[in-house]
Length: 344
Image (cartoon, rainbow, N blue to C red):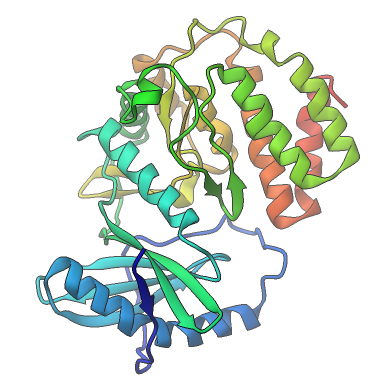
């Protein structure tokens, strides 16, 4: 893959932006997050932006007129580039990371765009590239359409649009054939998320979601609870119509990854894979979905027996991930679900 070397550029003062950004769950803080990290991120962007601008000019055949720092998460820094063609480009840069994270994001956005059709606005991706900051230190970036985010219609519109995406034919041939997984491994937040193609959904969820997070956690009690749950996981799917069909999932659908463009619902920043449609609600504790959302969703994809218990199992994956990302404050949430299911 072509490697771009980062040059220096002058400081630019960032105005308030209404472009797509990477957000965090309110109140959560990563291990090692600090003001010093943010200070280094602000300094690094002056070196990054000039070479990224050159890439944009070549890729889109237009002149960049302005580069603006647009905030950061714990694993990426965000920028907006305006052009003479009146097209703005949103760029996320991750120093010290290869292209794995952003390749997963690109393929997730492409898969969702295919399945959603006109029901949802999903940003188009221009490319993913490696960068070189200085000898021995590299990184990567993703460049995509910069969306002017605003209010995005009603909860009912979002629920219906999401159900249409879940019920659409998948982009990838393996998923069309009934397999679960994704063409590439990706990340959920900053955590690696394995997605090997698997014939059976329950086996996929056991091994590549629950046990994967339990291994990362390294907590004996949580591991014991997860193993007890895996032993009886099949029983929670007795009310689900078989075969379970792979749905195109966003994978990390919380309020920070939902907005609107021109009155239409918009979703972004995915951790996509093909899975059971109900797994999409694993982040519902931080999404604000109301009755109108669920009613519209279930009008398209009817609710199946045992949904409430499975909803807890799907939340467990994300609580375990938050425990791994942000520390012990999420232990009680994961343990409470395991206890309620008779596994602790």
